[in-house]
Image (spheres, rainbow, N blue to C red):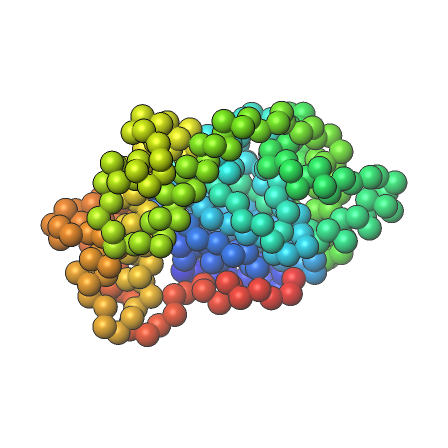
Length: 331
């Protein structure tokens, strides 16, 4: 990982990482875990401005990911793709002219494609409400809690993208912290003012997501279980066809692909933790891989390196780089 701070701008930083889960820990004050979904070496970059009660960032990832995210408490996050991309929030596809919105302290899931860039604005709710009051605006936070997707006019969305691009660029060095926070807050208010809720989430989506969530829980609780598709169907009480449809609808992948990538990412996290007694075979078996040759082939195809290389790269007992950011700190 590379971490640099712009001269004369102690609140601005750039983090780069070659591992998806390491990259997930580089965003200040977020609780995150990233699974890589597409094969090849990973590269991620975050350009961030961390202010008191406010955060603006641009994030780039070169590989498709499944992201488990949680924003810091008592805050509101807006996620704005830099360009129209195929991504999902909580299983719902994001369409052109839409942005993402989630309150702090609530888990949510993103599935993002290769070559994904996104702007993020996070601001404390009390700060947002105070700014809105000063400008004579009204913010309905309850509405936003139930709206993972908001529709915004394309012209307004593009204007805010340009503003955020300038803000996280080095041109923001000309602005002091208060000016940066004011610009970020006003951009967020402008988006909320012009936004509309998407339609009600269909009950069928909630049912499909419940099936997927049950399988996720099973994999977490029984990481070494030798799970087959018939076993997953029995556990979720659905047919093979329904199971396939649920995963394709919610995550955009088959249950087989999900099971394989989830467990391979679990192995990678365990290898990267550098536990003294761990070997590749011990860790692989712990997460349900019984055939060493096939496991090693699948691992290299996904991450672009052998599992033994991952284990060698991290000295025993070392905490994974970036994990300190998993402990919340005031911003």
